[in-house]
Length: 323
Image: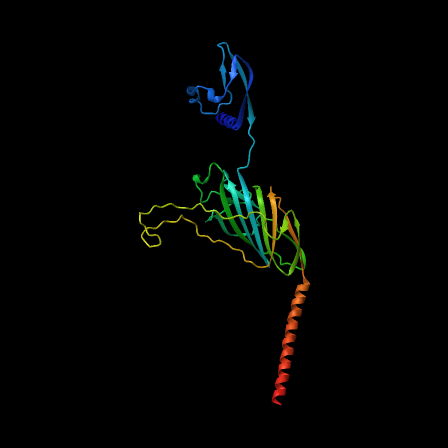
């Protein structure tokens, strides 16, 4: 019974009230500022309706309506960048995001391969460790390196995520085939999603899906944030740059690495605005370009023939000189 009462109380707290006059007699509506100060000082909520009576024989009847509140977003991905480098049977992945977060403790990342090897995770520029969810999803803690004072004027705090991983045991690219290149699925909406691929130059690719191929990113790119700032006071006349016994202890940070993907292969870029429920799709059909290989072999053969011809001409001139 106590639990039921608590649930009812929580339900009432999530409702909004509206007051409306139904009938009145000998009263006149007035502004809240016209109420006596002694009355206003006892109020802890805004005044919705205010009346002053004209005669002692007055009457007023009001109705109160209760409206259920509708839920709104507590967190939102402002910008996300998904990068992939394809190296024969291995692929390197990196996902960088900036999130507006007000209440969420973890971000769930879905559809990572079972054999994915996590390389690093940095939240707000600090190395940390992810967790595994009940359904096998990857849980990224969002409150690392933050405090209660990081909310500016009631606005949601910004959190940055840098997640890198490696997948292997992929089948080598054949003469032709297809690749699934969509990013992992997130439970939060993404305002702007960017994808950068590094693929072998010996192949021609035809991309399909919901993302638009671009030459230059037009949407804002995510940048890491850092809340680890300190304030210290020094004596008057302190000489900065001169070594002294004063030292500040930096915030503790778990040992970790910051992964940078190699710039190998041909670069392809894609964008999509407003990704909801993981609706970003990107596939690539590839085919081996034989002309590139033939042209390279022909160029090498021509170079060898040119060197041989030059050597033969030089030997002929030398023979004539010594005759």
